[in-house]
Image 1: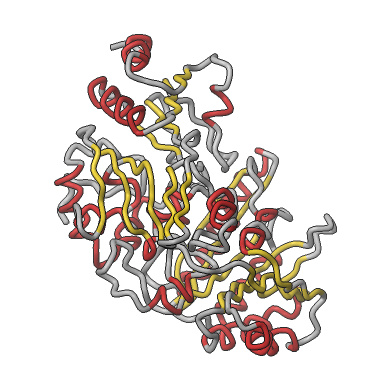
Image 2 (image 1 turned 45 degrees about the vertical axis):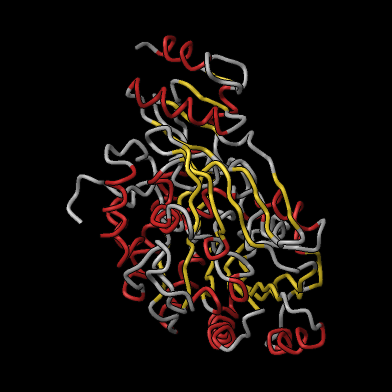
Length: 455
């Protein structure tokens, strides 16, 4: 079948918009957050509902077209866009329904963190939902979902109640602990390998305002500050989540800084301030920006570090130990960052998220510790080689300090060999389930679990 034939056939059972190269809106629809990604699908099926997704999956399968699935389009690897295939665009699917009595929220797959937080916030509720507001909830959740609330309430997947899934066969199922439990297990950390998730039902919690913000120091203070962060974060209560970061001053001066950013979701204001007192009093900060703000606002405060359209290359892994030697490598590497858009983030993983059994969900890495997100970003395509080289060189220098595990949502497109690290001890079961739900690997533009490979 030609592309025109596929487009005509799909249009017969489609209520959304179908775009081909040259159509108005095509170029905007194929762009994702990472400006380094420049792929051209043969067709883009912008879906309005589950029936549209079913039609697109069936048409692509029968026409032997490669499928990509776009939710929020935030994933740095750019796997939401196919080169020459059919891109299933879920971004128009924005339905959200909050049930304040049951403290649950159901949201379609095109919803972003900002939109979910806003809907929940009307009722004084919050769902663990990432740390950058432009992130799509679909990819975030399917990969695990690190959030500011995970110390107290767990990861996004730990709060998933059910999900509607379009399988490779075109069938629609609802996966939960009581219905299709194997599929429910797999989608909680297994990424987009098992189908197109069209809606998510989450638990919500009474969180309205939080203490949120960074304490910022000069780069020279990094060894002492990160040593303090390492010890302080290990002893922090569940209500207090935190990250350390190397970043550039937002005033355009290019000044290199380091800081500790926190989110405290405890209800007792005096207790929360007492928990933060050691951080506020440590050293000689250049700025202390911690304040009490609504939770929906809290999830927007890091947005400026993740500008849409920047050319991006990430590396990531967990530290086996945030040692003094590792801190020294980080500080030295950031001193050589090639642009003022580059950022290093060290995320504390612990609390409730670390108490879940590693085999309870497909996401396996539940050990307390720290996860590195190494973000190289630039604006000029001529800087691409230098930007990528800095990320790779820094990551290689940190390798002796890294654990043999990775977070799927942070892997770049060329980290092919780290899929097994990402899925860890759950890989064999995921292969078995991939063979059951998608034996022909129709959904392979993801951190792929190849059903043809030996487990």
